[in-house]
Image (cartoon, helix red, strand yellow):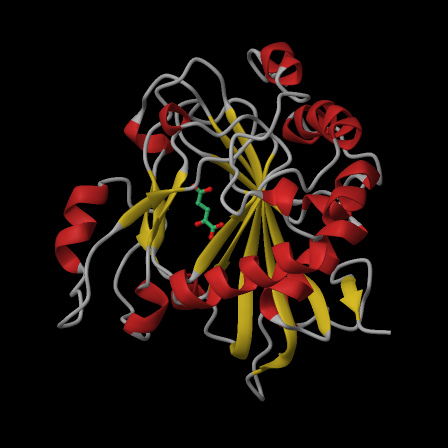
Length: 290
Ligand SMILES: O=C(O)CCC(=O)C(=O)O
C-alpha cells in the first residue's frame, strides 16, 4: 500500500496556536451567552455562521496524525470506514472518507466534543443534537479542479429525512481563501428546495448557470475562512461549494451531518444513514438538554 503523506502538516501544526482570524462579533467584549445568541441570529439570517476557536489546539494536534493513519488504511478499531478514495487513487481529487469515527477513537473524540455539541444546540435552538453521518475531507494542494466541490444544497442528498438537519464543518488546517474554502450563498436557505446542483461536479461556473436564483434574491458568495479549530454551521437548503486548493498545503476538515429533535426519518426509508440511529457508536447524541 502506498503511504500517503499529509504534505506540510508540520506547517499546519505550527499555525494551531495562531490567534483567531475572525472577530465577527468582537468576541472579547461579549459574554458567552451574547456570543451564541449572535451566532444563532446569523445562522437564521444568512443560512450559515462561522465560529472560530471551537476545537482546542491539543486535540487538533492529535487528530492530524490519525487522519493520516485512516487515509492510509490503519484503523484503530478494526472497522473500515465507507471510503471512495484509497491510497493509489487519483491524488488530485478531493478525498472523502465517510464514517471515520467508527474507525478511530481520536476522531470519535473530535466529533463528540462537548463544546461542539453545546454550540450546535445554541446555534440551532435544539434540545437534542445527534450525529447521523460524517465525512473526513482532504483537499490536496496543486490547484486541481478535481479538488473542487460543486454548488449544491445538502437536502438534494438527504431524501430519507424530514425536518431540521444541518452541517457542522470543522477546519483542521488553516482554511484560507487560497486553500479552496467552502463558499456559501448568503440567504440561499430562503430559496426553498431547488433540487439543482451537484456535489460531485467540479465546474462551479457551469453549475452556477443551472441554478435559478429566485426573483428578488441575489447570488452573494461568502468564503468560509476559518482558523484551525474553527467551525462553520450551515442549513440543509443553504447553497455551497468549494473551488481548487491553490495554496501549498492540504485543506483538512470534517463535515458532520446533524439532526435535532425536530427531524425524523421518512417512514419506510431504510437508507444506511437512518438505519443506525439507535446505535450510539454510529450516531452519537452530541447534545441533550438537561
Ligand atoms: O468541504 C467542502 O468543500 C464541501 C463540504 C460540503 O459540501 C458539506 O459539508 O456539506
